[in-house]
Image (tube, rainbow over the protein chains, first blue to last red):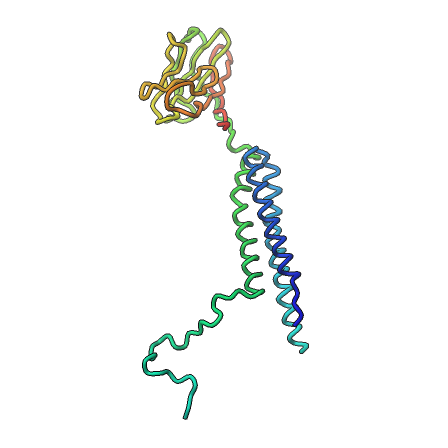
Amino acid sequence: MKRSYVGVIGLSVILLANIIFTQLMVHQFFFQNYDAVLLYMASNIILFPVAILIYKKERDKGESGYAKK
Amino acid sequence: MKDKKSIPAKDDNYTHNISRNNERSLDRRGFMKTMVGAAGMFAVASLPWGTIAAKELMGLSDKEYPHQKIVDVKDIAIGDSVEFHFPSENDSAVLIRLSQDKYVAYQNACTHLRCPVYWVKEEKEMICPCHHGKFDVVTGAPTAGPPRRPLPEIIVQVDNESVYAVRVKRYEA
């Protein structure tokens, strides 16, 4: 079985983006830039379905591989 | 008959069918599940910040209360103070006339332990008698004693020879 780290790396990038967005969101909240806070919250929320998507894609890739063998 | 899974008498207990092999190992799929879960946690944790931000943007925290008449201009001399309640019956406040046209008003619960703060005309300071906290009368900022936060300022408006309380100024850190 050939290993694919696309999913792992993609999810790691998403987690990094999550951390960065959360940090920026808290800072902008402190500085009362509430528009920016909403923007960062939206990006954080959108990243979650993207993460699920990557996970499902990776999981199904493995299954189809087994089926071929 | 030789059964590999037969239980030795000494181990005859109800845990024999629990397989703990590799229980703690984290495979690639498990790792990815964890990452997705973490992303979900971040998404959920963002919600309260966003809702508070949205609330601030809609201006719910800075609402204007129905104008409340405090006192007639002729009844308050320069340097005097009047006590009133704003915005609710339980929020005591004090209005001080500093000069001909300059009025300031604060909710006068001390920001230390909520004792009432009084305007002392002779010393030109607002003093909390409980622990000798003092507040600057122009800004409401604490100048001495235990309090560390300013008094909440009430915006006043002079209309038809009367002084009205309009809104409570937002607390700014």
